Length: 545
Image: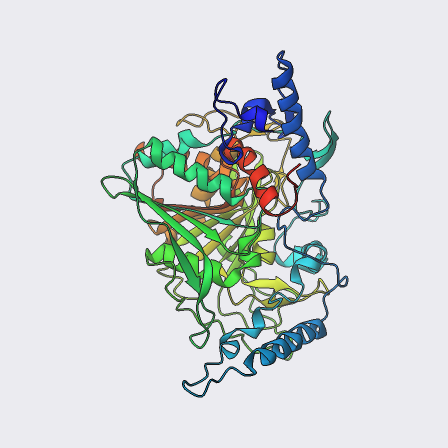
């Protein structure tokens, strides 16, 4: 690849900062193809870069978390956790031998380690996907969450298998990707004049939307818009006061000259693509401190003690006939503990013929005053119920796929969280083609008048939010945050750009935009592609040759 990084006839750029994106084209279905250069060296470079990308997509590694493994068994048994912890304790006891030198008191560093952190998820990532699909499609769950009977079987990502020249590749054939770089939308946020707090966070073991590319994207934004840069520093996490704080990642802050816009980039140590799954404790601490604008190392103030299990399920009162009360989930099947918050599931009708499914969980802390946070998963075409049931939601799945356990690091510990299945036809969201037979969807927003029938993702999401406020008017003027991960790195900037446009036009009453949080986001294909080769080399997946 070195020959592909020539600046001129004598100067060669380092591989780590080489612009490989110049050799390939990202098509609107997300596929990567080499550019048809006439120059033989450039053509060879284009094919090389394409081949490296093919290696990434064809590897047997779990590219969403290159350190994740599920090779011990199909469903990790609770006994495995005991075995692993016993082995760690045995090894730690050997470290204690001959530690006292007769002069100073021995400090048992091993006893300060949190033994629960060895496979803290008890194999949850290995069986959660099967359990998630089983649970969401249970007839009693569909009934409890007000899903129409005629809708098909729910799947987490609406992809079709599609062959292209390079390799078999999953794409959404009806979704046209328009933006391979979201810089213009961040420019609008930075120049909007609003007080905004932007958070971009990335797990450092994710190869799909890797942290190097996101960090370089943030750095280029700061340079382009002359943002003030603070010193890069580590941030820490400790589950309980008795444990020593451990490094949770690294934090870089940028601010505009007038201080109105804060832009934070956080890496999350040891996490993959799904930060709220891989590092739920640090993720909740991050969110709480982001909302409060406190140091990210500040310990969380929420109570994370598990609630006692119920001896049996109990029938709740019948719902009231209002739209809000019709959407309330009164008796969710499989809950094994007593809920201390209300939650709602139903449909928002942003535009003619489009019905977006939502699941809203009130804050467990102070629902009357805590902010409203929208969560979007990526794809394009992936359901936000993945975020609800396997990442940041208040309940996680048990291996049987029929019961739910408590997630003590749920983000609704500090915020009211709205999970939206978007765009239409994702998850349980659907389109009534008798009302609207338009089949195409894309990233783009339409003009402020919103008169087009062929409404787009950003527009539909904005109108869905406004519909939500009409059903839940208690959230008028409440601080509102837009958050998500993966392809939401495109959804969110385009949506927020439209929200700013609507606020400035006086067409978003009650919507109090306060900030943006993007986790492992696909914000710039250029920086992702340019950094993934270095990332894979440093992870030992590529050799020098």
